[in-house]
Picture 1: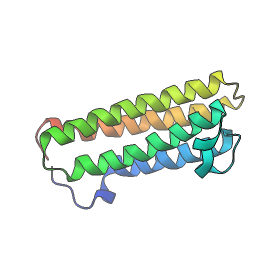
Picture 2: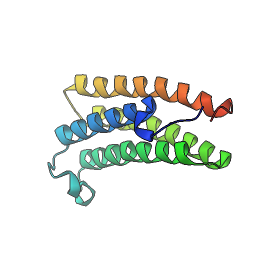
Picture 3: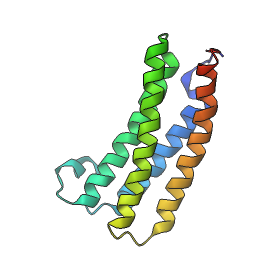
Picture 4: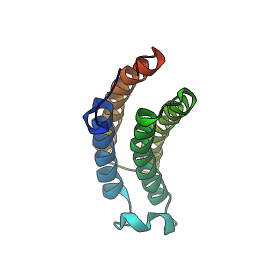
Length: 133
């Protein structure tokens, strides 16, 4: 499967939506409203928020890397890494919930966005595994 610009990939658009929602959730739940200084915070919730943003951003980068790479090994490495990061994001949701977040509906919204992303991702991944791209 030959793809045009990366922006036309459904999985890429889903990863952008996942990042936007992750950013909104991180901003809402962090004690420090300056998202750029979350790493400096000593709050567990701020660390989870920072990790959430970092992994959501890395998913976008790994999708780009996998889509543009000509190396099968490099693609498979990116696909594995994306799987790990989506599991991490689910773990961050659980961590925020255990940290006392009361607005669980926002976490459930993020979980459902991850589920939607994974569905798109699995479909896209199959195209690599079948040798179509």
